[in-house]
Length: 252
Image (cartoon, rainbow, N blue to C red; front, side, top):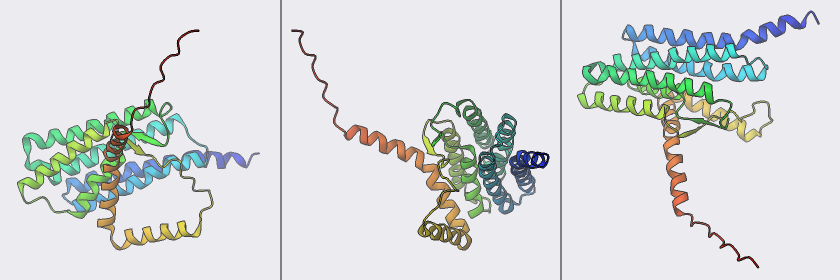
């Protein structure tokens, strides 16, 4: 019994270590952005996304979920996926549009923090298979992937305007009611076929050989999946004929 206590203490702090790593990478990305090293700042946000995905899963696997861990994770996310990508987008492209650039960056930050607050109050009352609204790590990953592929500042004014429109769109997607897959139902302890393992290996190979294209494609597909799924569902409901309502039978 005496030897079990250190393991429980270490298991409890393990998810917080990943959250601290998430926060550290977010802060480091801010430092790189302020230095104008956008090609180095963007991958740090991507690394923070990976650590954010791991901390919650590790907490569930070790049964060490806590209110402290949840609050700490939200605060770290506000920095790594709110402040860091908003500042990156502003310094990289939006500062050439002074009257609209910084408000758009702030809108992304504000909507991201609102998205975190809504998730905290709704996490026990919504379907765990879906997120309501684009998750803030996904919004940050979308911006980081674009900067990762195009690290140089936009040369043309229309390119900066396109970035501004994207930032605003991501902000509204985060506070929207579109449903996004959470993938929390994926059980890593479950046995998989060899084909699944081969597919995962090929996916890693694709990311290793074509990191820019594969990461941009993955983030863009996930960002677009919410509106596309909603449009598809609305189209199916429109095409399905209404069910006939049986007339009430007269009383004998």
